[in-house]
Length: 402
Ligand SMILES: Cc1ncc(COP(=O)(O)O)c(C=O)c1O
Image 1 (spheres, rainbow, N blue to C red):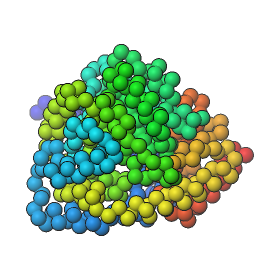
Image 2: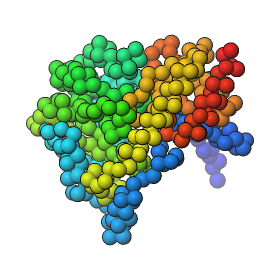
Image 3: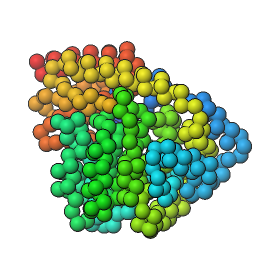
């Protein structure tokens, strides 16, 4: 018998750039938990981990679908009643030039498919910095170099239009706008949306409008859909059940393609090739889409009330704590405080976890302006948990930074 040695199987080199700080910290957290410590998780944006429940009428719709035998593959673009409901929602949001809608396994898959369907090697896509790390992970997977534009902390984390303009080179194919934003909680004004639309129009860019938090507006702002202010521009609007409808584990998202019909036709065909190649999104869960978009919305009043009071508590703490400052979040459930400390924010976050068992995510995991330091708080936990966590962070900082 020849003696053979089993050789190591290296992962593809392009994965070196795939980072997902939000979950990457889980390994350190496991170590801390193994030592018997209870971790205060202010790191993952999953409302179901806290005092939020999926609305019962959505659960019933999925249960009924399962009992009715909707357990086979669905059409690749999604079931008709869901697609009709998404078109209805687009109409309510003032999106008039809808050319296509499709259902995916979460917005994560919408992003994967829409970016893969657009970008050729050498092309690039403008993504915000700080950024929800899904975008850079998908770009790394596609072998596309990052081209980030700044969100301006001094301007309430609005996109820095001068920087956007600067970053639009000859191979730029699109721009991502997350509104309301993760990790900053910023919400864009109509004027800002119009300015970005104009830049896209002049430079032939597709706009990816990630509006997964559009019903979680915390103050009196109105959420304006990018596609509603730019009917002629190719826009893909992302939405889903994970956040607004408290069902992240069902993995249901969607895309709404709008813009000039002839201009977006080949791109839509590309998207559908990829939709067909992965068969379909989760089937029975798609039956919750119509129930969600057309049924009672009562849960949202309660969700927004809780989030508003938890945001206010978070801001009070930020204002009272030395070395911490924060732009007040106006949507979603994230705050992105700035730290005035000498060490890097990944060290801050790791030491905070090890010493005080509070889990937040470091700003460097999202990208930030050189020399600045931040951390992201998920303010989904109840007031009692947040108060305990904030007291622990304050104590940690007092001791560590004097
Ligand atoms: C801005 C943003 N887009 C997309 C997603 C992914 O959503 P889904 O659960 O629908 O895949 C998230 C999840 O946190 C997010 O914050």
